Length: 133
Image (cartoon, rainbow, N blue to C red):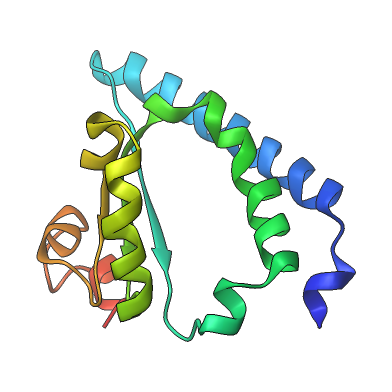
């Protein structure tokens, strides 16, 4: 598949660049607003199936993409995993007990699109929210 055409190092380079950009943006916005800001991550799982969840190759790409994020954990104000499968949601219920309560409180896993995310995007009629409908 196309996943194999992308090396883990290229994914890691891309990830470092994205996280560095986010860090610069957060710093600038925090200085402008005189308050600490963060960002929201949204992972849309629609169309994912068990084969993809269990793929070692995809897992390696995700690890390469997200590894740099470990240096910027506090920059994330919340993470939403939306349109997840029943299996993924069940796995999350187990995994969330294995991580710190603080980290778990920043992550929402939903089979649909939670109202909290819609409100954070500006309400159901906002341009950003309409992209999820």
